[in-house]
Length: 67
Image 1: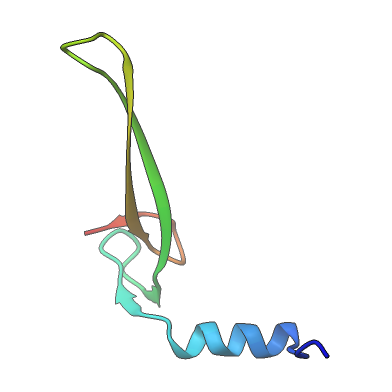
Image 2 (image 1 turned 90 degrees about the vertical axis):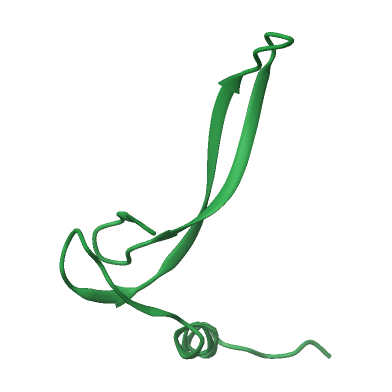
């Protein structure tokens, strides 16, 4: 049988492990979210496009990138 987990259970679990941060842009305390930031550059050697990926921390209120 499948495990029964409601949406409320999932959000409660996420909130329990969430990180509270003080945002420098909006000056409010919020829950930090993470997103994948993809930067595209042209390679100096071959002239081909390179895609550099990194995870960034975002403010939950205003969406600003946190350091």
